[in-house]
Length: 445
Image (cartoon, rainbow, N blue to C red):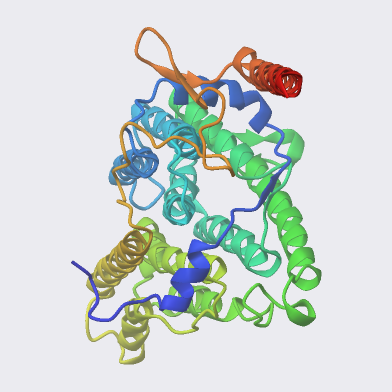
């Protein structure tokens, strides 16, 4: 069952997607410290558990914990319960851990596919909206609505730019200070709010001109935003791998900015022109509405990269912001609050329809299922079409699965060497037997 009457991906796009190879560089400062935890965690996951199921479970937990925080502080000014901030910290940590092990689970079950990469990035695009929003609410940034707007849209912009430079260069790059460091910082913010209460961020700093403590992480976030924006722009303008420095699809390196501006510019203009101060009174609802259309545009960019195709500028999801704009143009003949709710519902349903359709089409093409994998896992085949020495997955006595130890890896060449010696000995014995039979035959003559 499809969500659209016509397919979204052409046969040429599906063929290129099937040939797509994941390329990534990572110099994150915190990833090496978290790798032991992630490796231990994935070893406890059952072998029948699909990697995409791990990803979606983490996303659902992250969304639910953030919605609990939004429920108690929808405008970002009310003080949420401390336990809600602690719950958000736990939800983000769970999401971070599950997001880190889905790829490991795919490799250990031999179920890696381009669909997994696309599904992972799609969930990340949605999570970015809720993670940024939860951090703003946890520090009661609703008292500074422009700062809140800036921080949330900076997070969405950075995520979009990361995949923009991937569309240009063909390689996803993680810097020393990137998504893992940002998530750990936000977890720390939630924990501080949980221990000392959100009002701790309203404390004045006399040595810094009486500014609130919350402005310190804000200024740091601005610095990181500028640094990452510079790194991404350097790749975008100089790292094109296509013809004449173009994108992987052969299009202009600046073309992805157009669909993104169709979202960001209306979001800013509508918030400024609202006579009901729709954004200031309902910042969480407003950011979620525009966050959903931003997530869809980001997903379309990821699909364009993986299929090496041109990205279309217009999108059906823009109908939501268009309704807000037209309502303002005609002097708000409908209450903006209800139009904003319609915008959120429209953009959310449109995002789900698009992602669901793309996943179903890819599943049909690759002959796989979205949330199920073959069990037991298919064996890894060598270039000669035989199984390698030992399996790349070992099963312990207690029923859990872990990666093959270095002992087995080191023994594999030795097993191949002993086999070669046996073959040489057998060939030598055959030659001796042949010479003996020839001498015996000559003596009879």
